[in-house]
Image (cartoon, rainbow, N blue to C red):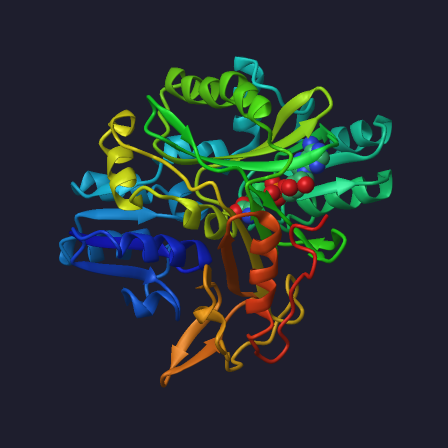
Length: 418
Ligand code: AMP
Ligand code: GLY
């Protein structure tokens, strides 16, 4: 089989690594890929958002199966366009991807089908949004409706912060069209949990739960990032909670999407808050999380490509999807300045990190230049260790991180400890 992977981060690296293990695979292409992926696949400089070029490439290279991993190409309809050409895909159609690409759509879906989530109001006029914020008890949460590179959410501690966020979205238009409509919602408290689930629209199979660490600095301080580290499983996600979520959140979501004529096939991401009134949905994503994928997928015992093709063929119920009883700890090594402006182009020394048992180093912002591995982005590496329990996974992950070096390298030292 000829496989096409769309994307070029740590998530796409772990996916490529697992797919490469399937004996049916003859060739893997990645658009655009990265330094790590290039050791397993042919990387071609086509942007993950350039849908016309992706479709032409897939046709010319006889692609049998494509994995569309990031949010932007899914929202732009990459799966629809590839499937129109007869190329099977893992990933939702544009209509189904709306569960992530419009937060207003997701909230209305949850309200209509009784799926637990935070109370909210939608605003298209700045004056009304500002008066609502002025009358609300803080903290409140301001969310841009559309995709905003993970930066569209503000948890406002006071009215001034809420006002700044509303003005940035609706007047200054820092997220362009994505911020023309906003949501103001109740701030939930509790432990956060992520559950990724395979679904073909008929069956839903949750993967091992996980916990992302979104803030930039230790102690959950500093600005939000794409994710600085993950542990899996999530220690707060008990079997009772899993059972509740299956009945009240996961199955109803799949059913709701079917009823709306937007059958979801792919990986559905549930961002949950485990509140004292039970789990509630904070957000849906229409894809694997990054770095959640780098911690969760290494725990998978079943063959990833077999599961992905079963999702695409709507026969997920017929395949085995199982995970080990072990635990993962994934630590992101970022460039200094991330999530703000970063300098790149520094040589990366991986030392002996990859020789440690259970450790895998997934590349996010790296590229190969004249045989040298060079930094090329904010999040550079996702270092994951799998072990029998969380404590030893943490120890191993940090042992590996200490063997890695590049100029300006920065990481959180408390992944899994808070
Ligand atoms: P996102 O950018 O959508 O991943 O959201 C970023 C973070 O904002 C989430 O991981 C939560 O920590 C926080 N958040 C979003 N919505 C709420 C809410 N209603 N209550 C509390 N925190 C929230
Ligand atoms: N790590 C969060 C996300 O992928 O959206």
